[in-house]
Length: 199
Image (cartoon, rainbow, N blue to C red; front, top):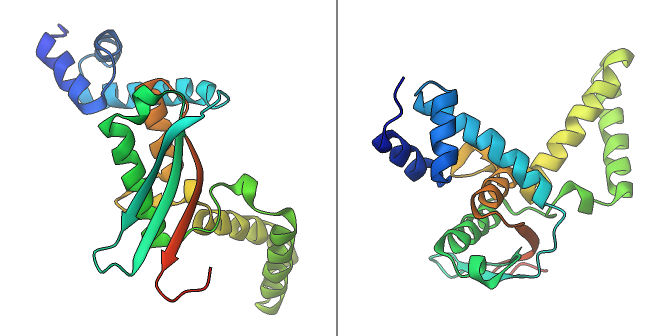
């Protein structure tokens, strides 16, 4: 199938990928746009994973104040260069993450920040609940593992489903931006303030 310039442009607009990457993805997918998008996402996420180890000391502190002025968020979002930090895409990513923090009130950035002793306490509670509910002993460990994963999904920002697009997590949203800009991007820390709440 012939890959036209308009097909390449359309794919570029949808994904932000380079011209040759778009052309190759369209060739590989035999002109199927959705398949080409999936290919680019897969390749982009793979290359993004390689960039995660790189230092990210530039960036911005991004703020969000809810319309009633009773809820606010401060977010430190890092990248490798000032050039990327100044782009609209970077700011939009920061705003999206701030909205997530405002809506879902995560406690940690990632599962690596969760203290091991907290997870052990949660496991004890989950085990006791499973026994009280009469779950078979063989199923208890699987139940505990499932509940621990759910704990991460509800308390760790990067593990959460995006409130504006449940098909992706905040972690995958960041990974897609890494793939797009070619730099490591890191959510360093955040603070969420609600009027009258203790910190």
